[in-house]
Length: 406
Image (tube, rainbow, N blue to C red; front, side, top):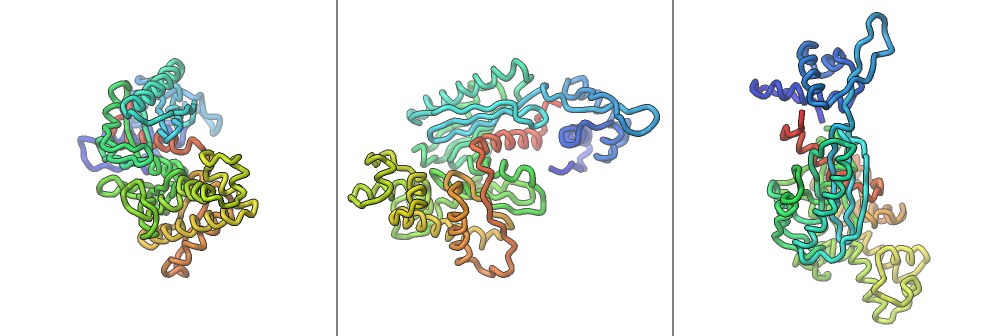
């Protein structure tokens, strides 16, 4: 995030303080003169701001500079134990949490199974309870909590944090942010999980030189766009619904109500469902051996494992999924013209061969392929990526809204 250059005189003092704070976060330990040069402020102005940050306990002395001659200047740094913030990934079967300290370093993580998402209020109460326990344990040694960012696979109404619909959970019109906020003593933010994932995947390279399409290939399928270092929400906050682009008009019914959506034919759930249907019709397959004859145990991983073992039925299912995913990606690439496509989620962990099949199918449907500078790659495959992204979105929002305790 670049340093701000505000023109509104009523906000100039606050903006200067935030710029000094950001300089300390990104470039500390650093001395006062270096801060002044970096953020284009006078040394006296920086000294006043630094004194205020000292008083609030946000920064500390990190000793004296060991370079140069004459009197050595004091080196300043953010006190990482002054505060922390939390990210929570509400998955269909598991919740994952991470906490970052004041300088953005991870200090804790945990995960737990969630069970049945019904009734909704009871499920959310469980998430709320576990989040509170996580926060209270950290407050003993890590200062105040700034806030908690929550992410889940759903259409989220901007501003209100209301779940418009969450097909994987079977939820509609759920005031998620309000229910969570009632029991959590810090600001709460709710975001779509793929958008949070995209923020984490691109965090180290979020600048004006890239437009990135991040696609989450998992139990469901979602996408998010990061352009110029900024997450693109769309006018209604529901951009990136790649999983609900129709790729087969005669395909199966999707949870969204349409037929033949990408998610209905190529998601992890769809791949497992196709395999179960084939096995139930007595087809011979390596999958039968892997599931021990119990079709309820079939998941996408088994299908990919069977495909790698040369099972014809599994190869056909995998190839079909790759073809549909590539086709849907071509829609997005033709419209957005990104320079990077990052494939994340469980399905993207199935090796280069699957990724190459997706890439080939995508390129078959692209226009002006010769003039594109497009890099398609796999994500980092960190199971806490979405939770980390939720934490980062929370911090970024507090920053933009000038709600940090500085």
